[in-house]
Amino acid sequence: MSGVTLGAEALAIGDVVAIARGRRAVSLAESARDHMLRSRAVVERFTREDRPVYGLTRGLGGRVVNEIGKESRAGYSRVVVLARACGAEPYLPSEAVRAALVARASSMAQGGAGVRPLIVDTQCAMLNAGVHPLVPSIGSAGASDLALLANMALPVIGEGRAELNGEILSGAEAMARAGIATVDPQEKEGLALCSANSISAGLGALVLHDATHLAELADAIAVLSFEAFRANPSPIDPRVVRARAAPGQARAAMSLRQKLAGSRLFETGEPRRVQDPISLRCVSHVHGSLRAAIDFCAPNVLIELNGAGDNPLVLAEDDEILSTGNFHTPAMAVAFDALALAISQVATIGAQRIARMMKGEFTDLPDGLSRHGTTHAGVALMSLTSEVLSKEIHMKAQPASLFDSMGYPVEDHAPNTLATVRKAGEALALLQQILACELIASAQAFDLREPAEAAPVARALRNRVREAVAFVDEDRSLTVDLATVAALVRDGAFEPCLEAANA
Image 1 (cartoon, rainbow, N blue to C red):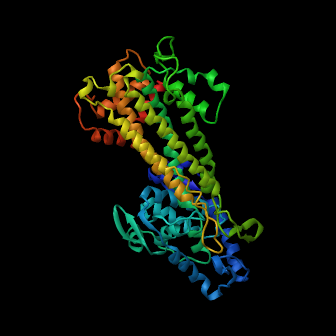
Image 2: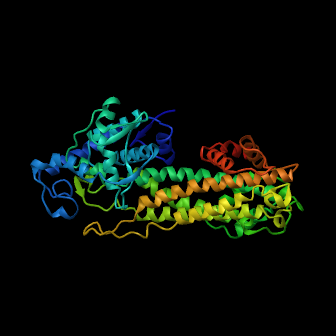
Image 3: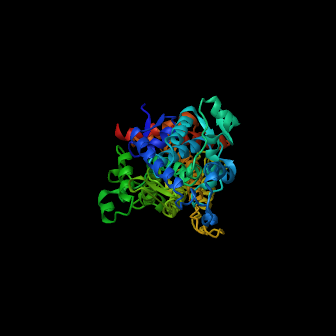
């Protein structure tokens, strides 16, 4: 697999995932290196000429009115990083740190930061060698990820702590063992390492990748439920969709139709009811809302990965440095709040589908999907568990972007972007467990119904579940079963089942 070259072409979400999780190599394009050198020359000329520039010849925050003396400017970069490296546990996982590192490197490769190519080369070397700074997850208000990015920058300058090959070391020791020279930051470089939203952008890329894949899997699991329930597919008829094609709905309906290919449910008389409960009837509408929310998030993340959100911004072509607000990401915060709300909708409808599956009045199958009547619960507790999980997701879906005021005299607005991204990721992790509950319940109903013909995707999912957990005949604890299936969902073990739709 070839490496990713920063600054040559636009960095895609898939590239971030490949670097963060697949350890794909990364480097700086020569064309980007040349542009960075031209931008750096502007910075050096401005400091020589004592031009007033935020964070270069003038102070930061409320001290913007104060001049930084020439004798202090080089050392000031190091102080900027050290003084702003704060935050609270838990620490970000290494894949999130890697995503943030490549996000910051990609943005600086655009030239707007005015740093030497050495800075990006060092970050690329850290990614390639597996040097992962210890970065707190809490401490960003969304008016840039300043404090957290300062933590990520510490090993670059030989400070802080980092993980290397599973061992926590001082930043200097981790860099030395990896054979990477630390950097003495020059004018403006300390601020450039900190003043950006790269934690939010990197983690956002991972969350969007996972949400996109989970949307496809959720469709497939709904198809298994359709087969187990003998649901009516009329709501996903193309004519119905065209009559009112809400955002995302047409794609979700098409996905469901493709995955239902080979089912007898499209034949007259095969569905059990003329009209099913909303949890089955409106799958495409709710799953479509998740796709619409992903569509809202994706451009925000891509812009941050490939844009120069620096303050101040170096404009090499115009020989200018301007103060900006490009680090501010309110649209991204609102988008990820919307994503969490869409995830909660998918969670609710999934939990309700499981609940309907447990009632013989809806399914013509035994209550609790147990062959043994009143004395056995079968898989009924999957309904309770999924309902509680959905409530947990609802709490994660409370909008964090509403907490957008700050008590600082200058930095008086902050969209809380990282919190919105983090909550959406946490909601996805909970949704994976609801999908596991539905897999267990639907596989149980499928086995009780024993359809002679079914959509290949549905049968493939049922078979994969049965490789992991047995049919529930005599009652047993389902805690381990749920954990086992949830781990398979999380690790992508069910994704090959989706290929049955294309077979």
